[in-house]
Image (cartoon, rainbow, N blue to C red):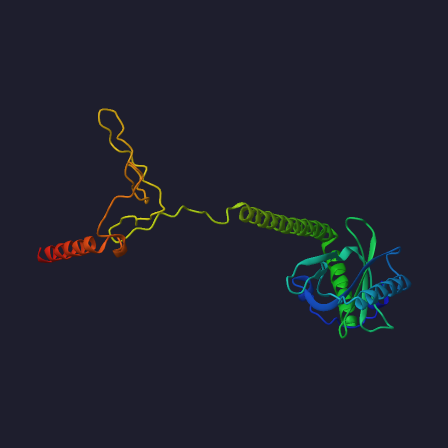
Amino acid sequence: MNRAFSRKKDKTWMHTPEALSKHYIPYNAKFLGSTEVEQPKGTEVVRDAVRKLKFARHIKKSEGQKIPKVELQISIYGVKILEPKTKEVQHNCQLHRISFCADDKTDKRIFTFICKDSESNKHLCYVFDSEKCAEEITLTIGQAFDLAYRKFLESGGKDVETRKQIAGLQKRIQDLETENMELKNKVQDLENQLRITQVSTSPVSSVTPKSPSTDIFDMIPFSPVSTQSSIPIPTRNGTQPPPIPSRSTEIKRDLFGAEPFDPFNCGGGDFPPDIQSKLDEMQRQRWRGSKWD
């Protein structure tokens, strides 16, 4: 039994037995970390661990890292270390595995306890920083030990085995919850990857052919450069009709290669005066006749 526990022997504890046996006492503190120690107890052992973790924390602080805050839940079953916001259990130190607990007399903010790890069977020293409650937290752990020991004497040792079984079940539940959370994260990652793959493989846009625009009579407007319709022309007696001759803009010529004669389109200087006067008279008569018609 160390100093922190023995100095309360003749004094009353600060918490009711029901608070520690049926519930727990919560505290907030900064967690400097844990480190392996060679001995399960001892002031010098704790002092070396505190010095080591303080130095490591000083280096991390110079790199911009802050000391993480944790919540401690103390009961006759042990000390739980939780994340304050999510209440996720980071460490569950069973009371029968804690072998030493003390606050630092040179630094009133520091308190520690040594616990034997359930998996590796190594002794780990946990170091905390609490500006106002370091000594009170140490005494609360001492009161939990005192109540647990009294309960052990009353039950004849049977309660200890029950607590070990309960602690083992709690550890199993914690491992299953951690595994469940990891599986959920993996499923979420797979869903995100599948979503990204579907987006990358889907066509950007589907191009549909545009139908030609029509007028108010639902007819395609005529275009001089458009190709002829490909609708087949009905045949007669199985023979194709002759092809439609293409229009030519060239001037037709006669057999001798001369252009056809049009006396009304000729210039005035192409004929002698007497012939020209007759042509003019014929042109006037033609114009009068077309007017009366």
